[in-house]
Length: 370
Image 1 (cartoon, rainbow, N blue to C red):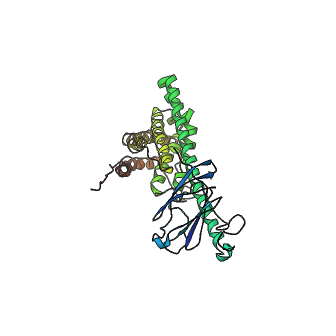
Image 2 (cartoon, rainbow, N blue to C red):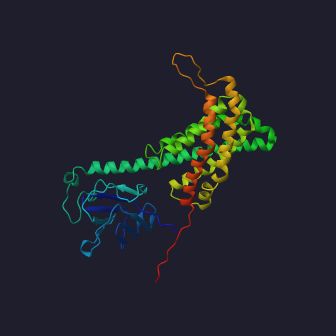
Image 3 (cartoon, rainbow, N blue to C red):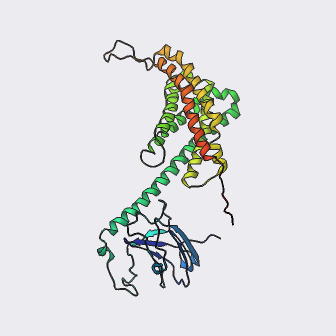
């Protein structure tokens, strides 16, 4: 049975934390506080009617644990109040240890005041005057939670969009192959090329996510991987119509699609902090056959394009000209092939091998002897 959480309103000074639990007619609540973790259970009337309610919070920092400084619990007809003493006198940037805030946790701008403005055993006081910076501090803290929630929603939407996009590309390719068999291969770019180009451009957002603090990790690796694909797709395939009908394009899009329809659902589970072992295993295992095959297909595209670009001289610049500058794309393609085929493959495979070792290493469980 899932125990619903009541609405909890919190506030702080530099010494204490107050929690107002929005439950009516609570008689004997069960409150358990250990270090920085608090658990509450109690029967009362709340948003779900009269039933058993409960919640658990990992607090940002520790509380005082000695008996003389034990938490104060106050029972009212329309609420339960907990007054918790901080172990160290300091403002907390947020209540919870993790940056994500539960939906039922709110900020109490009224602090200790009751609905009529007076506590049962204290004189009325304006805490905002006692702590003039409190409102701004709590408002910033609440906006920080909202910003974190926005980032989470944005990343989920982005990864879901990319997953649906690559799934659509694979579905179109699969349906056409089922109907036309090998005859559909030469028309692959005509039917899914536009979608693949759009999805590829969207992947440049993944280069910017670490820069804006939306994800962890470096910028160099995603930039090199995304730019490498973009070079093959836009310069090697889009710019040369004769390459668009080659069977290698079908196999290249198939490999790219298979990699991405596993990668993006894996990222979504990481946002929710859920571990699905099969998905994790696929994410860090499929690259073993698919990455070398993908690099092989990209190399074939570049190699087959060298005589085409020698013939057309597209993107090449010859001397003399007003800039006194020369550029020969086929020469760059030959150098790119050397870098892509050997050092590039080694770099990517080594990077993925390290990640696989970390993610799929067996968990060691140490049992304490009794």
